[in-house]
Length: 557
Image (cartoon, rainbow, N blue to C red; front, side, top):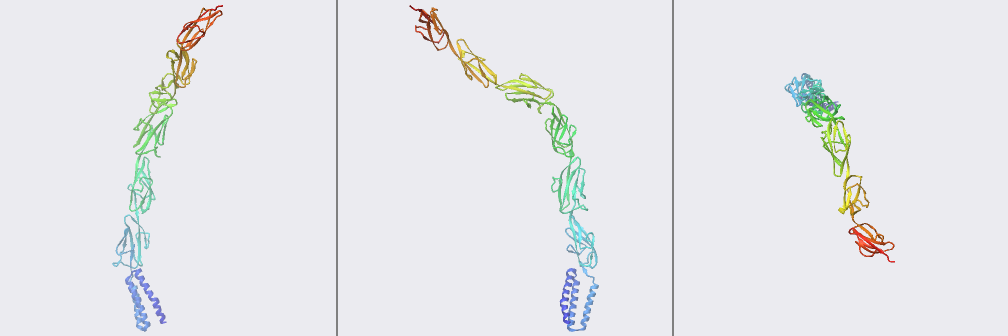
């Protein structure tokens, strides 16, 4: 039995002393209590061991004194315990951190300890840019101020978080919508019930302009040129500026512009760009106006654009704009299916001058008179006008009381040039001339006295006269003549015979053979005149006019 009790003391009592004292020192953090507990339990262990060894009754008396003394100490002494907030032991009325502070009431004793069961009120005070969000380790972690009952050493955590306000145009955002005179901003998400955001919250801002205004830009967001835009709530309260600008109307000839086209009976006006959905323009918008007249009308001018004589015209919207467009009856002049746009028009074969020329829009006002003058180019001739005017004179006057379509005709012509060889040998009729392409020229060669026509040369080769020449290009033709002489013959006596040939005309330089033919009862005697001799036949060279006489005599029986 003795040995059993000793083992119990050794293997149970000593671990009990170590565990209990460790708990008091490290958990309750009560040094005095720990020392007293260690001394009392060690004394009890030692006295019991001595009693088993020596069996002295007075050791039991000492044991009872130690036990009752320790009990009295624990009963009489209220344990001193500590309060720790966010790892800091409470020694005064406030504990401070980077994110805030905690007010403590009542404060601990001078040694930083509380009497057991003391009720301590804790008040969280967040630093600027932070909010209290809760406690850990108090009697009620969801309220501020809260209380903690000091039944033992207490470790409390005060939780703060970074929280920031959003201010738009000097208005604190407390909901999902902020309105101004010029428009409004939708905020998504809205701040929490305290009007603040947790650090890192991404907020989308969407600007909506009121009638007569337009969103222009942001200042202080992540992208000041986009709408919607975003920003992240971090480090500080956010001050954002939204800018709206006035918007203006455009009125053309008393019609409010609400679309890209404004229509009138005389024409229409294209507007680029068109106004916004509210029918208005942002200040500074540059607008191009293009007038398009309907059939039978022409654009005349603008009023109020700053460039009233040009079409298209441009203007800058800086206020409500009142513009007038004027159309007038105007007509097109068309030559050879081409609209006349200037003071002259060129065609194959010639040109036409137009006086006066049409206006800048290529049209004429009603009843304007313009003169058209046709001028053929070299190698052509003016032929005629047709269409809305029919005439063969080169200049005509046109009354522009409607659209006019006119055709001008030029015809290709070729020159015919003639000559004679020799120069004095004759003539050609016609001597020369200009002929329309595809026509025929008829030439007649007429020799002068003492010449005969021989042949044509050049662009025609023939021996007949007159001759027909197709005029498909310029032609050069020569009529060739040959000098001729007259041969006159006679006989003596008249009944004595004949000469062959009797007479005739012969080319210059030709040789003529003459034969004397005696009549019955006669014989040829001799030649007389431009030929001599008594031989027949004989020859004569025609270098001039010649006269020849054949003399016959009676034959002897």
